[in-house]
Length: 288
Length: 187
Image 1: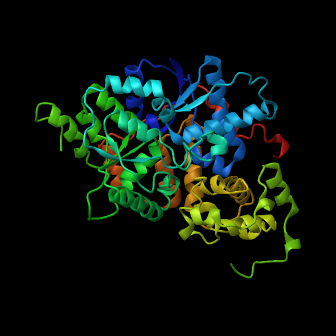
Image 2: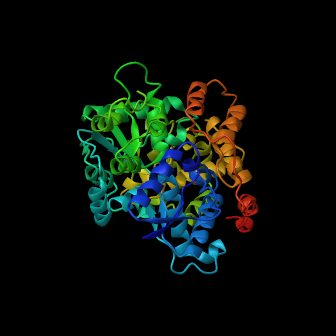
Image 3: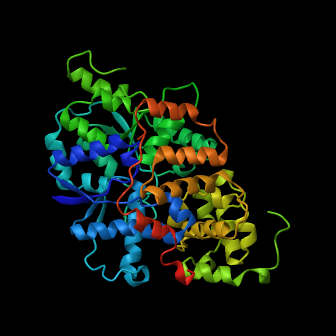
């Protein structure tokens, strides 16, 4: 399989490890990624929240670049995914309005969890896992933008998605049933109103813990950054839950190792995952 | 809610027309309250989501544009997703925010549009968001220097932040988008 790849800005910066994990997993699964040449920022929430035209035209440029590759587009970031889908919908409806002459045979826009939870891909993951993530209870956390608005994302199970749970099971982890899977963590407000983010993140983490989760797994770089970082403001009490990317767990389970460099990029201690690997491998590796 | 309420006929017909062209059918609302009950940020709002929709249907934009709600909305789309009448409520919030900015109305949550501006300046300049530059611009703009300094340092030492920006080749195209390409027709 060959796909166009739109990493998005987070995956070049604070979520660089997510980018590495996605590329590694795709390599492992025989999916060839062609990065969209000279892609630009999709505008994220800031563009569409303040200027409709800019919020549409930024992702449109990427769609038109991808269309030249004649490939469907893989998107790991939930926000980028939603913005590309919105722009795609507008272009399909009326390309002329957006000064585009031809938008016939447009690319499909595929979110990473949709790709990884396809039956064929899951079978391949199960077959390639060298270190199953045994006894790891995970709260699968979707957040907002890979799901909503379903009129834009085209997602069918928006209130009760199962993609992350299926991926978690394929690598041998145990997803828990819990209440806050699709609640917003207020990532777009985390810098301006940290008090709101602390409250929402606190609720989410508490719910995950109540269900018996030892870690959270997500497919959104904003959720990952926000839910890990705002736990640091929650003060003493129960230990914080690390937030992993689904692709990160798949990469680790397939390769059979969770390198120290990767552990270090988390703001919350990843001991719960390190342990899975240190039990299998010789002792004395990785910082605690 | 206060004495800013005026009779229905005081509503702005231009505003209603704008909503109609954006596909936001505020008149379909029967005030069931699903939007408000599911909103994750509702506790921090001064107008509830259903109040926003009803005031919009009345064309009463002034009270809306001065509200905290339009800036505290996180754009999570829970309201629009659950609306039984499929009203594009999150899209309504977008219209309200951009209208408030265009009209130069002092935002009730000034830090929020300052962050948006810092982020978008970075995209306009480089073609991609450059986190460190965006954060620095936001800190200067908001004067909020102390907040999250510890977190910033932690991210820096962990190597989570990219120190140097990287501009794309199509910067000129991106700048044309920001300069208002397509907006010649006042839409």
